[in-house]
Image 1 (cartoon, helix red, strand yellow):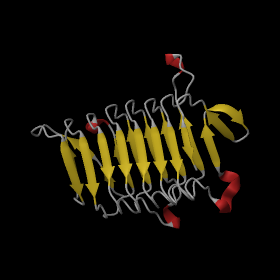
Image 2 (image 1 turned 45 degrees about the vertical axis):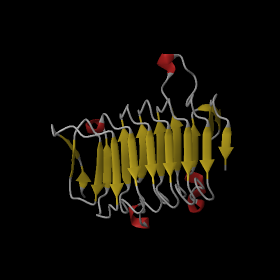
Image 3 (image 1 turned 60 degrees about the vertical axis):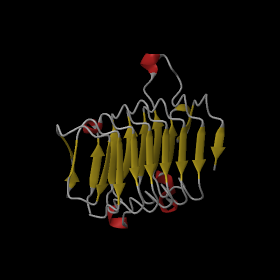
Image 4 (image 1 turned 135 degrees about the horizontal axis):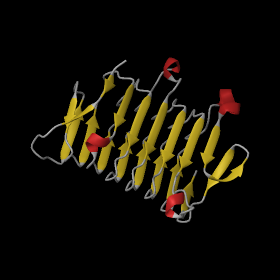
Length: 212
């Protein structure tokens, strides 16, 4: 199992970096934009965390990270945009167990866009503590065969009962978030708010568009 780590160093300040199928990614805290192209080398997990503390935009282009079954974005408080292209994060049946996408604790994140046929066989999706999220777009056949989707916030200390107070638009293309039809009893959509058996709905005071 290979885990790619992001190494913090004191190179000359630059704000934009492209990762083009290299063995290692060495970055520093000044990076504001990261573009990943044509990454086809097999790895099983990737975490984007504190070394990218200044990152504002993440672009992962088409056909990247196939075979990777755990992807974490956490604690990037300057991050505003996550764009993931189509046909990325493909896994085989043997790689489904434990597969998960987690995006959490990103205070300024405004948009999440996932292209067509990405994360198709991932089983768990967690979107947590994204208080500035305004729009989410999930493409055709993406995030399709899930077992668990969780939208959650921990804003009680702010006296804010809304889970995603800035969310204005959710667009789900055909067959996105469909659920695993072969294991229907395992599928759950948790949107923390009003409990209704296995499904809870968010308090979304800013929501104006829902396309399904």
